[in-house]
Length: 345
Length: 216
Image (cartoon, rainbow over all chains, first blue to last red; front, side, top):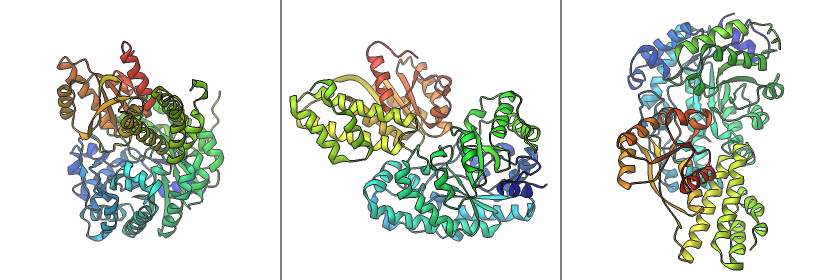
């Protein structure tokens, strides 16, 4: 099986040859090429080169065209702060006052320098890998993007007390999100990962999410012209698992803090799980711990398909050692071959 | 009002429902009886502690923790102004977000500390290691609370601690934020004095310090 066949089989809740593995590398590519993160994202050619190298090196079953979370903020005219050994971060929120929301102009995807780079990267990668490996594009959900646009504190005020302004911002963000997702699909992305950390009950209580972010997700995902995965970026997902299934997403990125057996039970034949290795803990693991973690995920959720093994945040940390990532890949090949053998206790 | 009669549960429910009016009514009813500020402190800290614990256990959301802290802070500030009360706890505390611009965690801890009677200096967010060290030294603080969201920022706490110790500073460093929640030993590796898992825990850690030192 090639990567595309392996992944599609798993998503259809059938057993492929082995559990697919998604190492979700974004800025980690700079480490692979030995250049600074800022330089790395300056040219699509660098990202293409690193993605192809890392696919081979780590037996990766996906290509990941995610640059960094605030790239959308950059398109809106906001600031991005580059770090030496971490993901580029958003600067001061560019919407200073709630009253400024009606001044926001929806970026034109094809006129935004940073977004165009992602589209060029996607097209080049598509040309290179064809249909052998899925290319995963990324969007921030309209519901979660405001944390970087206006800041968390003001955004909570919007959610709880300023319904009109909240709706206005959601309309702007949804229009942007849909056109950004569809542009990536047109450029060659196989599917879109919809990052929605605020959907996690760790951040917003479920009742409020159902009134707000969930409705927005249903409406937004229905306008995206391709398959979608929802990712809560380490946030706990179990209490909203059924809700996310109703949004139409085919895949769900779940947390290292979620109970894997319960996740499997509730998701079986309904949504494919993506996870749930703790990226932040990888820097402390030795090879044995890495293997034990892979075994835990496979034993907990691989039977019958419906599992893609991955980190739980959607972005491999700079500090995760290469040897640990390689060990994870080897362990998936060893323990993840179907049919999955039961662990002898 | 006797401690057992303080309506902590009802106040907590009002906070969780983000019901400012109901929360203010309960607050007022507690103060109206004997005008003792301690009753208000017991009411707010009792409710905030339970809400913080509920968040740790996955029962409540971060937004509820935040909004509860803000409501309590507003109520406490209002009564302090009306009755010309000043914060009684004189320990010098500063709070900052290192490198990141995400200030929600800082704001939660700030509100809860204000609601429990502490005065504290807000250094802001997005500060570099050097800026944090300089401000902490210039203000001569006793306790520095450092909030982070991103892993690189959390790892850079170590540079803050080392720079302060090089300057012979004994400032106690309490850290908080997502990286420290996801990796429970990280606070020790960055040489912090303690890990403040939530606002009420930070309050307790500072109380310990006030009474003779953080055991870290």
